[in-house]
Image (cartoon, rainbow, N blue to C red):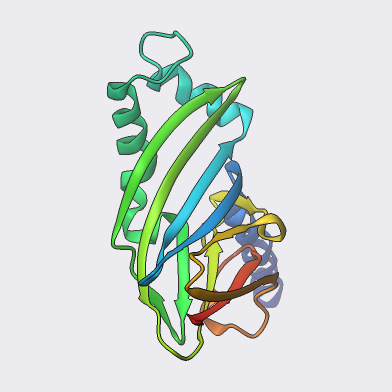
Length: 197
């Protein structure tokens, strides 16, 4: 009887674990990695939320119900959606060597309603200086807990760099990168290297 109880508890624990990992919010995201003459300057993000979440957030955030986001309403969206995720780098992870680079700030935040979808655009500011030798890093935009399932179109990610820099990039899976193993959902990464010409 004791063995049967242990087996049932084990089955219950194994069966329940994936329930806690399923997403509640869905986001289609697109990024542009931006360089300036000093090196990496940031990542421009465009997030498009699923219709259900968009409707719920618009009903609270679009206070006057006109379908347009005013400056005051924009602040509400920032405080409600983005501010709680500041410690998570706003889900923008830049892996340089064996460490994640901390975001320096978030700029140009803008919320809008496009049809039935909530759209957030912002610049996550990072600083990695350019050198004469290649500097390699990986960009991932994802929620490691998978509460928000972020599908980032790395295949069509864009890079904006001045002519003074030599920049190469490609998208790929994150197999073998230990620091991403804790992510519940296996996101794609954008691998980049840059140097002075």
